[in-house]
Length: 243
Image (cartoon, rainbow, N blue to C red; front, side, top):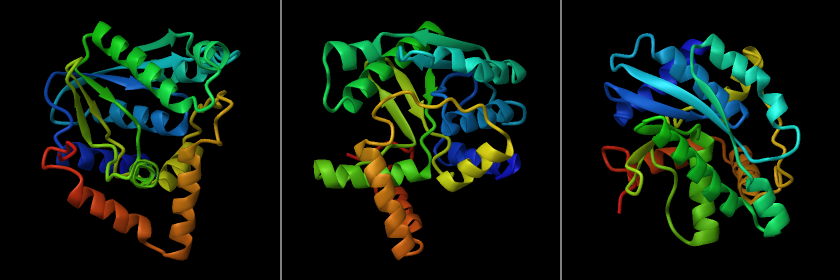
């Protein structure tokens, strides 16, 4: 995927769901993976020509795994190249989950603690929005996870307003297929940092991701049909989950 194509995907999502307004200060979470680094490229580039003026502050939540922080130098250099302020947030999340609580299914608690750290950072930086790098396949997988494990129809929304913090979460990569992000990663040599979590590759999300790939192989076009159904049925005109 070329950079111009990434801009096109991202701008369409932002325009379709009014994700960005004049004066927005957006906190951009960078996990170290290909998705969040692709979003960094997209938003830092869009600042130059998007009609609504906005600023970005990037951050990474360090969960406390040994050696992770040392691997972030490439991300720091990329943010400096794009003139995006970058902060590494130190947390004891890994110790809490794996040493203190010894969680057998740690992903849910980890996500809650990470989101808390993200929201705290955004508020400290006077941000009004937080950008997550969930892409098209993530939204499809989340719908299937909700059906399989929760018995409900639900997925990530383009915009999510958080009442407690008065922050709005936006997902500008929602139209980008994962395969295009993989191509972008290789073409632009993104400084990806390996996920140190021992659950990486063994979660329910990974299982459902493999399931959707199998469904696509056996029923070509099924992912696009599911995504079309999501956009038609799950969101209101502003991109919030319908009641």
